[in-house]
Image 1 (cartoon, one colour):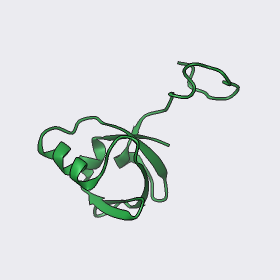
Image 2 (image 1 turned 90 degrees about the vertical axis):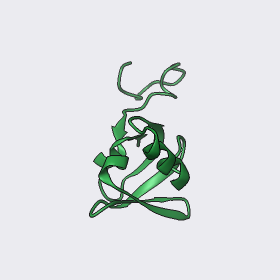
Image 3 (image 1 turned 30 degrees about the vertical axis):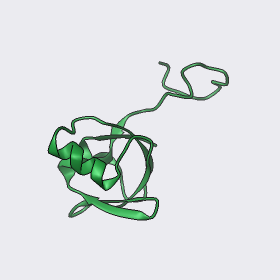
Image 4 (image 1 turned 30 degrees about the horizontal axis):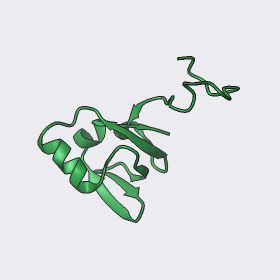
Length: 91
């Protein structure tokens, strides 16, 4: 993949291309879309699913400390750094 979307009209990979980063790496005010739940297993996966953190969900970071607080539509949830590190997002 080329890594850029500039001038990619009609490119077969441009619409699905994204630079992956974790939710834990986003700064306050950043908006992103959940792409996958990478390292979430067992109980952590169930927690994320119960909170509504699913692939395709758009979120905005409201606070990073003492917990990662994100807004998803009308819901606001808090995640510890371990859970946030397992959520792969794209801006």
